[in-house]
Length: 372
Ligand SMILES: Cc1cc2nc3c(=O)[nH]c(=O)nc-3n(C[C@H](O)[C@H](O)[C@H](O)COP(=O)(O)O)c2cc1C
Image (cartoon, rainbow, N blue to C red; front, side, top):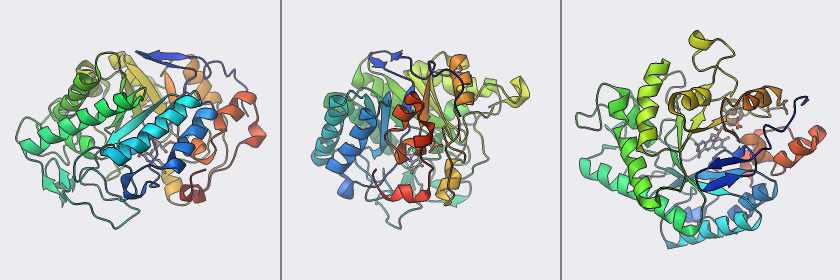
């Protein structure tokens, strides 16, 4: 099942103050196991098991910044307030005790509603009061709300560092708040946070990154997660050409992003096949080429089906890693995030390293119901 050498996957990587023992990243995955927004001992043990399982870098589930509308599910954790931060401190202490490295993924959902719960937060806000083109939801953010939100991102990052986390990831993907600013379909603002170009609409994200950089200092790594697709429209793309992608990413790198986490459904899909062919660079590969920053790729590693299918109830079988190893060997991207395979099995990386392909588990949607 795996015929290539695993060396490319199990070699260290350095990102500023952070040294990782291998290239495997646990993808951020919302689990909704934090009642009242407070991650408990079960959540800490769940992440600790991934550290014990030799995952190089663990990214937490999305965790809400200090804005009333930041989360859309009452069991999603906060990343503010004494009780939640004490819970997160326990998480990082356990992960470190097991030799792991970890960062929280800090999150504001904007106007997106959860598909798992009817619960409604107060204070729903979005760039222009739209969740999708022509679909009103949430208050259009005032300049004061924008400034307060940027400050809340900065506080969350400062707390991440203070609690002992190794890195912070900003969730800028999948149609949530930052992505609502990027997307012309949801950003119709006439002020400096809007505009006809993607570069103009990236100003909000750039200011978030700058605020975080100011809060964490020069050496603490900042990861920004981005996607072309949105849950509101899987087919839409922000950047149709490498030039458009450069206009989007280069200013964000200049604002202080150390690594781009480039979300796609299948890591092997070329981002611009019309430019470099069907086996061409993926999103992370282009991000690395255009910016020189670190990059994380993701999408269906080790499984036969993609995660949209899993949300629809489809099962997936274990799949080989040869295509991934080839791309890692040519340094197309630096790190690879693994979602469902690690949600399902904290020992996935150990099994891969040991060549225990018989021990790899199939994935079924039932896995979403518990913290294994
Ligand atoms: C249950 C579940 C929850 C997710 N929650 C988040 C999240 O909070 N933040 C995020 O950026 N992506 C989230 N994702 C997307 C994953 O990080 C990842 O990109 C996706 O699952 C593809 O990787 P995979 O094919 O290895 O599972 C989630 C995915 C799953 C399956």
